Length: 327
View 1 (cartoon, rainbow, N blue to C red):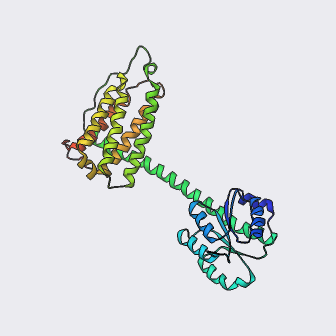
View 2: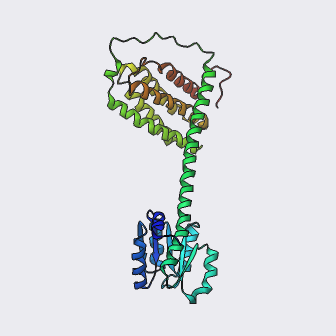
View 3: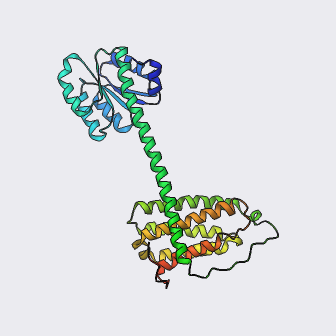
């Protein structure tokens, strides 16, 4: 039999709903459970238990069978209909054995016999709570994998989009720009409150783009909200003459998105890839030029302006390149 200390390792972070109509039994069991579990809610009958269950989340339910108003079988049926995987332990008397088959078919995890003794309680709780913790660990691992996969997929999409854009631009004449030389550091003139605002907008735009990936049918309200974020982004950049060309271009992009809303919504899968890549470059500008001093603060400008030009061309369908397609 496992020790109480070993059991507490499993139960110390868990919550339990305990249902018993006999006051003395309920009080004694509640005191025992409180020494093991993080949170214990002890109620008198199935009606109170069902109300508590709908209002809260419990790792484990322990219930008597025979109770007034709603018995343990009815309570189990209600719980399993909404949460089929909910762990449940049933406490039964000798005269209630005919109910056990029904409860087994409902998916009850374990049974305790009345009167419950210490060894039986510890052994049963250890078995059930081990399964609960294993399930939690498996779920956390799954979420971790999904998060890692989502990040890798996003990076791959950005890389693929950048490659496609570079292929499109390869035949274009690149704008020549003289090396950046300055008598004093541009970094001293940056308003870091503006940078904080840009950081928040980058996060909001990332959220907007994630929403686009999750939903191919977006509304006009979504487009207006997206354009407004870009308009605000451009306005902040225009406060600094160094970034004013980018800011002006971003504001024009916002206007183009609204003006060509129908095309944008019809080809959302194409534009969300482009905007995700564009947002990635804008984040790089903020992090590498505005949040820290860069040798060449103009480094990202040609790329950003070409990105905006490409998106606008796709929006207005004015690009004459025959190999440009919505992708």
